Length: 286
Ligand code: ZN
Image 1 (cartoon, rainbow, N blue to C red):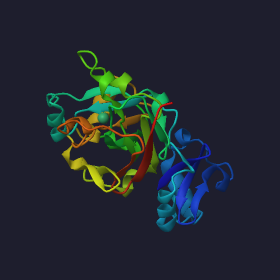
Image 2 (cartoon, rainbow, N blue to C red):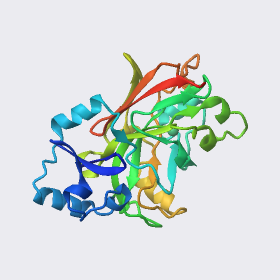
Image 3 (cartoon, rainbow, N blue to C red):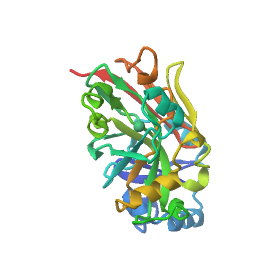
Image 4 (cartoon, helix red, strand yellow):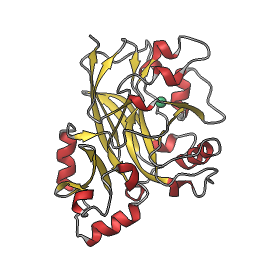
């Protein structure tokens, strides 16, 4: 299933377009994405019984052409985790050490943006980082690696937009703050349930017009999604709707020689196989 948020209400993306779940189910299911994320089995059974065509086909293609009706699938997570340097080649291009343990920071929730968000550049040293974002369904503490994927409600595409001057203004670097300007965490276009993708084997990349910026595969992750869920839950209680930005492959601007950053007027499309794409235009601040 593909679950999108439109006008603050959760919609199932079907052959007919977006179906308002609360409305179509006569109130049996909530309009709230977080509430639905723990009821996916019931939701799927209801959709099959109601004979809702779950293969989105053309409707999906139409929505991807015009992302403007779509809100961020989750805009109010309790926690947003992000993982630094989780792809070896990216770790090497930054000149930082390959981590022995997951490198955890946050993107503050106020930085979440819609899949088609316009993003104001606070400086001319902002960088792109396409990432697979895992969405927590059932929360918990001390989740084992073997059980971890049972706690995932789905996946979406995200950008971990990063302002490099502020990030590296001090030693040690500060990741969370420099990656949390408005709309620096666009996510979407919707949440795809795990049964529809092989999460350890997805093409992931982003481009600006004809130029490929990043072109990787989630198979290159150092710490798998299951490992990350288990690792994080040993310190923090994971809660329904929490997001995990799982790290970016190589090809970011700061790794180019000389470094390259996002220019005003650029539109960056970020795409992950089976999850769709998001598209963000960058503007100068006034
Ligand atoms: Zn990142």
